[in-house]
Length: 463
Ligand code: P71
Image (cartoon, rainbow, N blue to C red; front, top):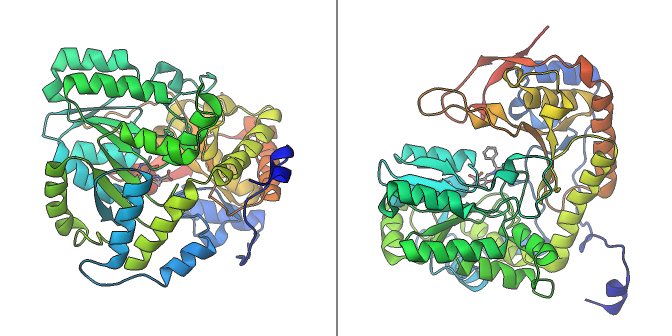
């Protein structure tokens, strides 16, 4: 870093723009019709009708010129592609896992890993559920147990590491069921459903120690590991002088395997992988991947995709990149918070999560406050967000609704895509809806699909 940059307190994106995509604005009348047609589900809106798209940070990132040129080097051989070996080398170098299997995206890796590592009737304790992760655990005959610290369920609690595992809760599960009943620990970095909240290295070290004693593997959902590493660098004693690269490597070294959606941290539009240090797990997974994804040297990806992931992994570990990425999210979060709007605190890594229960205190959870708020934000200004509450939580295997404590609307920020001025417009739009919040009446679900209902469910406005 140059001396000039070091001395300044202001900071800027460590890149400039070489190509842009034009945005389209729409009228309120158009949006009212569009959201009604979409059954008040932002997943069902055509992107053409969206102005600023904060649905997800998944696959929506801007690739660098280095990634685009790597595309041209993609080796599209069916077997033994050079691009596979480049991806393998990047994962071994930056993350340190021994064996890797590419997959088309994160859930492809979750499917294979769950089938290989879970025996029917086994338990998978983890730091808060993720939708696709849990569904694959359940389809493999397992049962997920949430063992995240209690603070994570409270949007106002300021704990700096709300992604931490409660080792006491884990110990109780192990004592009650026996360690053999635990398939593995499902440990996510920068926990998505908690609001993009990190675990601390201290907590991971304790978990590591505990699992060595009981012979239990830790499987790391490393989808946002670099963002977690940034928080460790900023908040944890002893890590201020360590680089994100070093911290990420240390996190991975304390776990036994991983699943990854490369569509987030790794700055690509599609791709993922599974990794393990256990040859037996690798051998079985390598066999299973040919059933679901493709040969184990491409796993559903084009050679060019594997090239772009390899470059994206390296770019994601740059300290300046993370400072600007998370800095942008925090800029937006602080603006929304200072307008008096309730959000999950501390502000997380990949988005700002509005607490819909406090935003719409007059709506019971059965009237879908977060789903309603996401629809209203779209109507207000064409901004598309995502419900992360009772609709996302779905039903237990016995059919009962889960009633999650957190009823959130996620304003997810794609990486390297929007500017600070866009953040200002977003904050202003959220404030406009906040002014008229008492007139929002809630929704009724009229269609509910069996799996991951939030993607395709439709709703009607309550009159
Ligand atoms: C996100 C997504 C994409 C998504 C998935 C499900 C519902 C809505 C949106 C995907 C993740 C993730 C974590 C921690 C695994 C996956 C699956 N997140 N773990 O946040 O966040 O990866 O999408 O590549 O299959 O919008 P995949």
